[in-house]
Image (cartoon, rainbow, N blue to C red; front, side, top):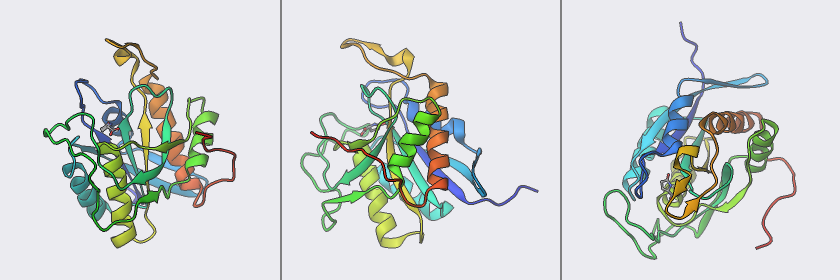
Length: 225
Ligand code: PCA
């Protein structure tokens, strides 16, 4: 008999913007079904693939949260050019797209939620996640903002849902991943990349930190500018 464990919902995006792969969906799929352990706490990862489309991604994540009633949600996405795995601190109430999403939509200066607050903070222990990833030998850094494209919209939409309707106690957040080595060379020259195995190990370490830390650790961080 399989043990019924609490669920950690991990999402990844389909490819977008001309790329043929998106590490976020590959990493999420690699962790699907795995058991995360931190001390006496255990949880099972459920992975969900999301379309890279404004509105649609949010709606699918909201449905998955309602279905799985997870203890925590970690949404993943690709940020080409980042040199490591970067938990995001803030989701902003702004959709401003430089490129069209996969459904052809390109919102400009629109709120994600008309009556919503300007921003939400991640309720995941972002500094503990960075520390855990670094201890696992994975390049990681705290990031302030997830931008203003589909990833930020998803992050904001998730936090808006959790603030309004739960599930009670469910924590949520977003982490951007770097390119895979095979994607590193492009018209703009070489961009930073991290091997898939390290990305998977990093997200697994971050999930252990989520289970281990109800509250974030006190550590120096932030950005000067
Ligand atoms: N990255 C994009 C959307 C999907 C993804 O993986 C972003 O950073 O908004």
